[in-house]
Amino acid sequence: MSDAKDITVTVQVKAEELVDACIKAIVEGGTLVEVVRCCVCKWCLDGDEHEHWCNGFGSPARLVTLEDYCSRGEEKHEIKKQ
Image 1 (cartoon, helix red, strand yellow):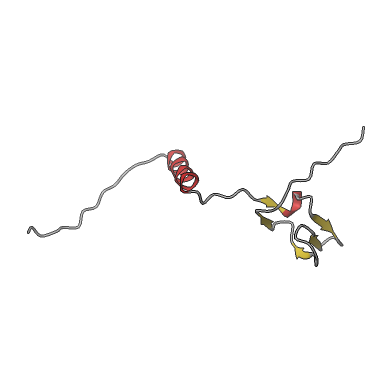
Image 2 (image 1 turned 180 degrees about the vertical axis):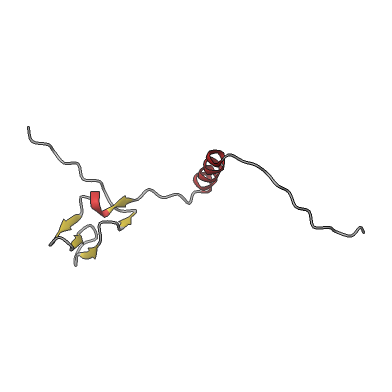
């Protein structure tokens, strides 16, 4: 049996190609989940300016921040008045 040596390999990859490869691996691995942020969710109810509530899971409503998110969220589609 031969003695194993440490080998260092340097590979140059464009950042865009690396990101694409990582996204592809995640998607094909089935671990990617679409989420909706509370700030655009139809279940998010406004309290005062710093208080927002999620009413999407039944009662009682949960306190959330607008940066929070979940996989059960649904985007609200506002109807614009003309």
